[in-house]
Length: 345
Image (cartoon, rainbow, N blue to C red; front, side, top):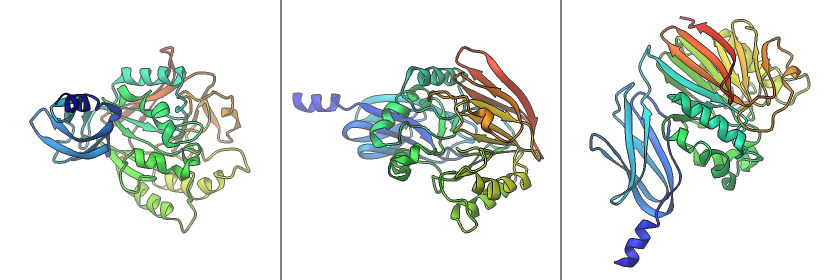
């Protein structure tokens, strides 16, 4: 009996929990335990959702109420390991807040400061624009670079990641894809939140004319919504000769213009940069999440309306009805950029 009690007590969370693939009616709660265990998730209404046996656990929640905030508890046996909250995606017009951050996975104090800033906003979800882990998205680095620094954020906000070039250095990005459980194809997917649609792409994968990603982008970007956003790691306006820019410029840029996407969120630049509208599209690079800063925003060839260099921070987006406000805030609490857009429909 004593040995059994010690074994039960030894089970602890080593990763998560985090809410993923959140829609109006469903969500995934994922987490990892320090030892094999049969785990489950309970809701305040008494519902109990099995999360499987082993060390990697997934609980699939269904029949959610759109826009409702849920509090859940991760359990093994009679032991409560952690509590978290998330909001089911609201239907149609609603007020909501989300954060955009990229190039953050450094595991250092600068990343922790940005994570603390984002946590203070209590966002409904966090959208990453890649380079979630440096120097590569290997299995051993994920806890140091992502799950550790953003543990508190994940317990209160849904998580929607995109991959960057450092993330795919480890086995083509497979460790991160196994760690996260995004919608659809996972490398590229679409989700909606209230009156906003977000299309996430993988700018390290082909967007050529016969690629499955381009076929997806054509379908996903064309589907209507009041606000239309896209997110992928590499800005399509890198200097001439960039290995990735030609494909993005040739195939993705015309799509976002034709389908009236208002904002494209990027990373890769280790600075904050916002373009002037080009054919109705604003490009915003937010590569200031904790990785070593650089003065490379001036390398973009698209005309810039605002550049912030040498500062760590993240972008806060508040949507209320037909108006969205975008504020780039640095870890010293100062708002360095502030602009608004109305929805297109």
